[in-house]
Structure formats: structure tokens, C-alpha cells
Length: 531
Ligand SMILES: [Zn+2]
Image 1 (cartoon, rainbow, N blue to C red):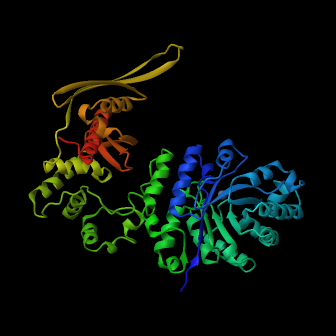
Image 2 (cartoon, protein in one colour):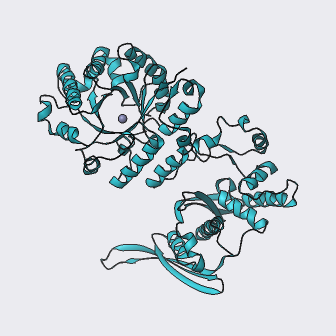
Image 3 (cartoon, protein in one colour):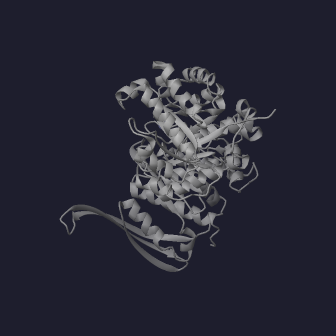
């Protein structure tokens, strides 16, 4: 049976740009647009030309993409003609393949927010769609507050959708702008709309205010909608938009959808999904959500030993899909609850396969248990576990030695008479008989120590050039007689690989130093630096 086409519309660069704390530069926008295009997204809504300089710049020239680049904007203002509305004129001049207009479809908003009549609101939709069609653009209409509007006054909400469709808009998008609609309501209302307007002209735009944006999206598809709007990692105003990173694998891997529909995302592109998701976090300088469905670090993690042995024999016992399909991997957590099978599986994954009866496996397991008892957490620090295992098997070269380090924090008045706190670190290391001393200032003591450590590693410097600290987490543990500090450091390098290392000590600087050292040594091992 031929599968029906579902269209994916990404609004990371428009609705996602409304996320608290997110500020895209033009370069960021171009990078994300490229990622989306390579993923096989059909429409990329890149911004609101005329509303801010970055979006205006984005649309000031034609950008070559397979996807249809879409500019967002308002329908003509009430009481003006289309040609006499500068906002609309700028939108029509933007170098875009498609234009997505937004119009209010809730009578309450028409009255209170834009203070006009329903007739004028409908005329504005018709005129705007007509003007964009005349310019040769594909046209979409976002019916803002559609679901609330439909509940309040269905005739008017429907009339907005119908007006756009009758004028030749390719898509009429039903928006749950306030995000409060529930899946059973979406299913019913979209079903009713699809009796008037064919579903292959209907889109869904769901917000996540009841954490059901993804569920609402699927409810709409079940009722006939054939365009899905969403964002990468669910970015978006307030609680975010429907998360395409969760929606895409469900569409492609769950038979209810996969048997019925096809999208522009190939299997090969799906295999890069985790990387795309992490690339966006990286760009925003955010730590990736470990518990994100499909792509999170914990999405396929198993802790208990008994599950682990089952998973090794038959992965389907505890996994709803094969992690590789979305570019993720199975993770057997090595911890004090772990059995021998977790350790063996993890050793095999990192290329250190040993015989299952090798006595060193038990030694490693004992070592993990002992160290976890004093605060280490290897299940969160895969790179530190790998180093522990390699050291036990005699597979970590002696690269360099830190002879001593010194970190100081000083508070004083600067030249302008302002109170400032300055951190400075001095590190003395020995590399191949050579003694090196590095000094660095940082925004805090750990930052200063990190910079000083990585400033001059002699012959190894070229191997750690791309090394970057991406996340730093501290926890005070109250175990036994005294509190200890656990530091987890996440690092990344030029290949995009990320790893986490751990340090534990009564002293936070010492704990950080251990984790930093593990990260550097891990990078050297991984890069094949000679001993
Ligand atoms: Zn929205």
C-alpha cells in the first residue's frame, strides 16, 4: 500500500528563538538551518523578517536549501490595504519560498487584542494570502489560538481556516498557542475541521504547557492533519513546542505511523538524529538532557546486573527500539549495583575485551565498588571508568606528571576602584624529562586551573587542542564522618565526541583536578598519543 506523505515543518529558528535564554546569531541560524536541511525537514521557518535585524539579514538573500525556507509574519493590519502595510510589504519582499502568516482565530482576541470586527479579520486573511500568492510564494496560515477559539466560537475559527484555504493557502495550521488543549480535544476538533478542509492541507502546531505537545501532535495526525510543526529539542516559548526529535523517530519506527506515512527524513538521516540534537545544545551552550527520549544519554541505559545480562543476550528484552537507529547507543551502567556482565559488556564496547573468567574483571568490579563507596560515580563518568579499566590492564601510557599546582583567589580593588575577585593558577608539570610551568587567570579557581593545565603540555599539546570543557557539576556528599565533594566534568572535542570524568575529595579544587586530569588523559588515549 502506498504510504501517505507527512510534511515536517520546523520552527526552531522562529518559535524556538522565543525560548527564554536563547539568542541566535545569524551564524547560529545558518548552522541550524543546514542541520535541518540535511535531516530532511520539508519547511524551515527561519524567522520574522522586518521584526529584528538578524531575521531581516537572513532573508536578505536567497539561501540554497532543499527545504522550503519560510518567512513568518502578520497578515495585513486591520483598516489598511495590503500594499499600504509596510510590515506585509517587507515580508513579501523577503527571499523566502513560503510565507507563513499568523492570524487570530479566537473571536475574543479579535475583539480585545486587535480591536477589530470579525469581518475585517477575515478580509485581512484573504487579502494577505492573495497578495503572497500573487508574489509566487507558497502560503501557510497559522490560525493562532485555534483550539481555544474553536471551543468559544467554532464558526469564526473555522471561517478563518476556510478563508485561507479558499484563497489558495497550501496549509492551514491549527495552533494550540496557549498549549492548554488536551489530546482527546485535539483529536475531536481536528477531526471536525478535516470534514470541511482536506487533511492534506491541515497542519498542527502544539505547545507543551501540559507536557502533551507530542501527544497532541499525534492526536492531530490520527484525525487527518498532514503537516507537523515543531522544534529541535522542543525549544520554544514558555514550556516549548512539540519536540521533533521525539516525533521523527516515532513516525519512522513505530508501525502505526511508519506503515501509513512517509516523511522526508531518510533512515540514514535518522541515524544522525542524536548528533543533530546534541549539536543544537552545543550551539546554545547547554548541557544535553540526559533523559531525553530516543537521543538522551540515559535513553538506553541499564543499571541492574540482571537486566544487563538479559540485554546482552537479547536487546529487545529491555529496549523499545535499537538505539543505533537514532544514532544513540546502549549503555550498561557500571556501578556498585553492576554485575560482572555489565563490566564485561562495557569492556568489550571500549575495545578491551577480556575473557569472562579473567581475575582482573573481579578486581575491576571490586575497585569500582570501593571507589563508589567513597563517592565516585562511574555510571555518570564513562571516561573515568574506561581509564580505571585501562590502568588495571596496564594500558594507559605515562604521558606526563603534575609536579605541583597552586591556585589562589584574590579579592581586591581594580584600577577603577571596583571590587573584583581574581583567580590564578600555576601548574608545574614534567613531560618527557622536560619541566614546564604554566600560569593562567580564570573566572574562578577551577577555570584557572583548567586553563593552566591545558596551556602547555609540551609534545602533547597538539593532541588536546580541540579539548573543551562543556559542563561542570558539583555535589556535596554527606557520607560517613565528613562531607566530600564530587565533581563531574563533561568534555568535548573537535570530533563532536563527549565524555564525562569524575573526581572526589574533601577539597573541591582537588576533586576538580582529578576530573580534569582524567579528561586530558582520556583525550590523549583516544587520540592515540604516543607514550
Ligand atoms: Zn507557537
